[in-house]
Length: 479
Image (cartoon, rainbow, N blue to C red; front, side):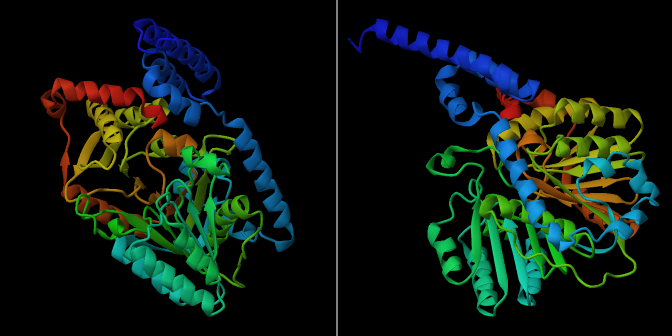
């Protein structure tokens, strides 16, 4: 065959379009959301040269096999936990029913797999220094067990400081368990884990598919950030382990992020979330600790752990329910704003109800395609009456929701399809006026450092930029 013949290239192009059309039909039949199916199908039909191979790697696998395997692992884990008497929260859970604010979130008791519990203490941790100072101080005081889970761990100054501290505690006889996401931490050298392993630290990579081919798997990332020390102190939020989270990456600094420190009965739920992920990775339970007593007062908290194996789309439904519950105020901060139709409709309805709806986004891009898609959604939100802001000083990575006067949520979930349906995420819902006031003060300061997006911004955007935004939005469901 003459490979230089124009007929050869014609046959090749025709074959690619035929394969693209077949793959497009497969996407229509297997992709879970209409938006995702349309995004894949159109790109496979019109530009199969660029999308066929990515679809064969990333998109052709249905959720079913993984979901069933994950659910089976969760069942096995709970059977293994049956002898631990691991549901000590019945009396505390009853107190949640007396909260009018929590009652406004009518779906939450059934949406979340874990109950809303009373008598917790929470502390707001603003930015990297406060977060890692608190985490390191808690680990330093550990006497029994340390559970550590991050989406990203870098082998840099902060990563090596964590490594040294965990090795020190393991040498003291503390049981240390570390879980990181294989995709998020793809740059982590094997030597980092090996050093920890040789020092007595139990460390695993979370992967939804095992083996060499997993390096191409970008779905089902474990995006959770959890630290629990001795069953007494817990941490969750937006920070990963890397120098950029301390503001030491000039392109994106100063880095703006938020974590929360929590103690009380809700730590049982946080440990259970970690145990599910650890059991998937290692097929064994980590040590789980319940204190003998809890404080007799404190705030209501609920851990919302979500993932692709949930019976419902927990994360997306949480945002819809939170938005619908707002009566006076709804403030959200997120690095990415790619809402699905249900979330966007809920935002529009909130505006029509007279709710003060504000969304804070970064003004700097860490992922240009996602930023472009977010920008177009932001312009549409402004036209719908949502007040949109761009944070000025540096990259904004925090994931915070503030509802009315006393409900807040802080964790790892973004306002995008990946968090809604593909990632494992964790949020801490808190019902307390004093803590909500602290969150409000923090966000007011953030909004003071931001510029509000106006309708004129869309008009001033160059047509070529608008075209790029629309192309980015076309593929936004699969970002």
